[in-house]
Image (tube, rainbow, N blue to C red; front, top):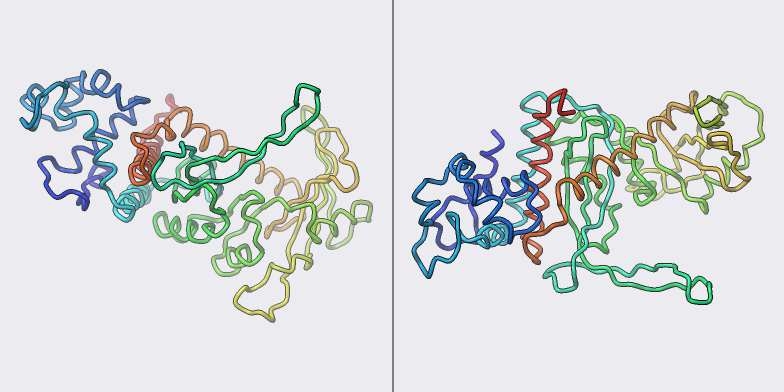
Length: 386
């Protein structure tokens, strides 16, 4: 049923000789084959007659093209630029609906989800000539010819992909593309709500996020309004971090729990503390007089045999219980899978940042269609393919 989600209206077209679904399906073949440039489509895609006929093109269309206007100087049923031109004419609303309909199919076919999801943002860089892109200033530290460190400012142009990722099943269950300078924090609850709408209200039990999403009010709503637990690293300059670091040498009691365990590289020591109320933002954001709510934290004092100096310990905030600190650490360690199996796989394996055109609507359509095909191939992978 996935191909039915590609049957869009194509609101940007005034005259249509080919269905939008056939053009999008042909573009999806480009994604699936890993063709890294539109200029390679005539040889690598249009040169495969059997594939084109499978996609619905007739022998006459493949040989003579679908239109006799102009001088025919290309191979294949359409010109190679017809496919990116199609993506440019798709509006944000209809291509987003196409993405969500594809994700909803995973639920309808009773795909199983792990319940543990990560939310992350990854940059999709472009050039300054891209229409509709954003820009942000970044600083790089390099050594000059005398060996001294100098700061070099640079402007980076492009977009940012914020998405919800099943860390064990690897499905992308919600996504949004914004300008590169935008903060990903405001999109946390919206993406979680969209994911619950498409895959089920009870499908998400735990969310793993990085410091970029550290906002007490939104985390409170995530737990108390939606019933979803979270784990997030704390920042060094926060009062709640200083509080738990000051408890490093305290004895165990009903709120403080210590645990150590051995790994191949060395011993890990962790400390779990419950009932902290020094994160002032962790309360109902709609009530100005609301008091901060209790929050739990886990501090790692030693990692693989190496002790952290006082004031450098790693601290994680969570709504989960911390009687067994290792469970919190092990679960948050799963967040690295969105970096390797999500960000890296989409960019290196699926070429999500090889855009067909330097225009915001074409890039958005390319990104969402790539995610759709990414999900579908995961759904059909065999045990051997895994």
